[in-house]
Amino acid sequence: MNPQDRMQQTGGMSGMGGSGSAPGSGSGMGGMGGMSGTPGGMGGMSGQPGMGGMTGMTGGGMGGGMMGGKMKVFASGATGNVGSRTLKYLCTDFKDRVMLKAGIHAKKPFPEMLKGFNIEQVPMDYADSKSICEAVKGCDIVLAIPGQQENRHQLIKNFIDNCKQCGVKQMILFSAADCDCLTNTIAKQFKEMEDHLKKSGMQWTIMRCNMFMDNVGMLKDPIINRVEYPHPLNNNGSFCPIAIEDAAYALAMVTAECNKHAGKMYTLSGPEDLTGKKEAEGISRALQKDIKYIEVEPKKFKEFMTQKASMPEWQAQAISEMFDAAASGKAQKKTKDFEMVTGRKPASWEQYLNQNKQTLFPTMVGQQAR
Image 1 (cartoon, rainbow, N blue to C red):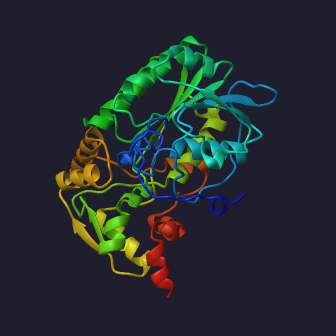
Image 2: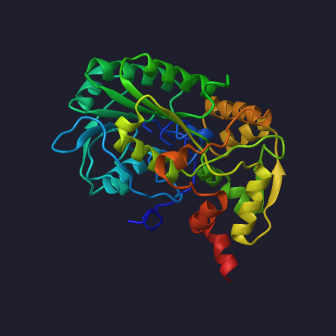
């Protein structure tokens, strides 16, 4: 099935390296740069579907232990943007390779996009060792997608320890770009998780991710109502965002081919470096309407995120720190890792906008049509 035909699109934000509401199991709005818990980016609120990129090729070999010809995979963060879309691909493009268990938090509904698929739902709490062991029992590989909690690094380290104790042999961690070279809050959180996994004795794969293109949903209001695009980065630094749909597809493929990727680390990015001004120009072309770029200081953007986007103070501060890093030229570099893993190119900013403008800006697209 063509992934472009099955996209369920929505605005909002994901958390970095988290489940997208990032790359998860936590709720709340995500940070940029892969907060879908951006790892590196925002994209869609927790439990809601994210917007689509241009992914969708079937991958190659098998990996992991086998059960009836398939390996058994446990996925945390199934209710978030990244987690739900990753499971969607595992249930479609890779359905002949995996059997799936999904960790579900009691307060979160199972995503609509996953209903009807053969996924065993099991209750799990990152802070409850017993529930973790029950959830991962009998699984060959665990896919860990952090949520948006302020203490997520501590929760994931506990999760890693319990998975090891309960016999899990291999784990794939969804993480954040640049966490080994930056010192901001998000980088520190994900570096702790990565280091802990590497020392656990389990086989590991780490999938770092840049900011999500889907974060544009956070700015729908000023775009639609004021024809403006407020953003901290002009020509003083850039990000290299990727669509959540693309990040999820790469994560699904690596999971389905886990042996091939054991001991490897990838950083997923889009195909181009973007400043706020370049993003505004792309939106203008997609809508055939002049969207004015407004440069704002990171501090002011932080205020916008807490007041207008209802983001927790700690997360807004962490994202502000990321913009400071980007302005200094230290963050979010373009890589070829998505193409290397999947065999195709990720969606460009313009492709992403053209695919999602009807959902993002329905009134403006209607005006354009008239």
